[in-house]
Length: 541
Image 1 (cartoon, helix red, strand yellow):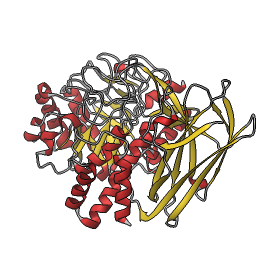
Image 2 (cartoon, helix red, strand yellow):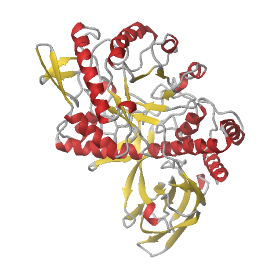
Image 3 (cartoon, one colour):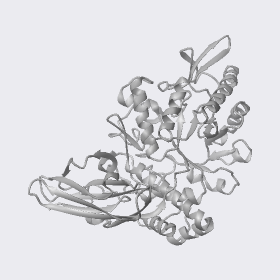
Image 4 (cartoon, helix red, strand yellow):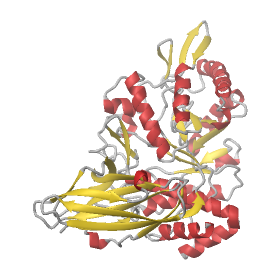
């Protein structure tokens, strides 16, 4: 007899674990329009394994998607000099992460000695009437005909969840797509793949996309180049530049098609200090790059013509109010003068446009060099103490100790808690650097994300991407789905705030948690977040 057990989406079932290790899930609560998930753990006592036929019955059947939870290698779970003990394991191994779509008619293969898992996601339609809806799963053994049944009920509340209003970006790497699928940059095949990745990005809750007006100067070895991805075609004669925005228009149209509302222009100077120019193609050849100083007269002349032209076009497209610019990514204290000088060149050329950058030294804000800093979550406290109009934050590989993150070896609650923290911190935006970075450090080497989840031991496994390339597009990871649940938690808390006020909501969160929640302090278990979610839904009615 096959063992089947429904469990929370916040559990990660390692291959060597047992279904008995996890609490059984009997019911879920959901707002109308909300996306909820659960897992079905499977194990077989047959030494040959078991093949099952799955049947799902539910009034919500048309809204249910099923995925196979796939395991991936994790060679670098954490940086051992920058972590805590709240990981599933600090030892390399095989961890559950990738969600491969399956049809309900597909055979379900259950192997002996290992725990298999199916992932069920229910996207409750807004028009669903409040009530309790059963989800009944029958698994029939194709060998002996025996049946195993599991039932989970979904209580749909009257509340309609509001649309996510967080400005949320995970940097979108077009060259990774071309390199993985082996297609020519900006060919029609590449554009079709880009569209499918954009669609997946929007489904994971991303609302802002890194827009390669020219090849983004990110994660590139000094003196090296990443494949050209430049949406603005540039020609020049006698010092006069002309700009063709045909490809940029196509990009914006695709983003709008899938609900992407915000656009961040590629960084205008190189990463970690703004010392050089990005790679920019003019008249079909590289004109600017590592060999061009950031403040060279030639580059300043280029910017003086390009930026006014670009901003005029953004206004023509009707997206100017939803655009921002970058100077340089992650400048530190030693770079402050370089950064300030670069910004002084740019700011007069883009009046009315916001400039944001990931940086964690409050001096940048205190000196008025940056109005909208994006600090790392492990260094955010000084920024929370300041009266910053629009608050943002980010995390990446350096945030592995105490704070939340999305590494594969972390428990799922440590990813989902981000949503509650963003609400408590009153954050308007969130940034992460790797939506689909399928390279090693500094883009030196292409990698297969199914075989190498840490960028060839460059970062903790899971840091460089949250989606996997699949057939003609992308599929999501457990981490992407769980983070989206966190975004929904944030929205429900904001809706409750509209009803009872922010102070009462904050008091309620603290009471439910049993302690104050900060970016470094939060409940370390899989029970708190579902309990908070359900209690908020009950209060909303």
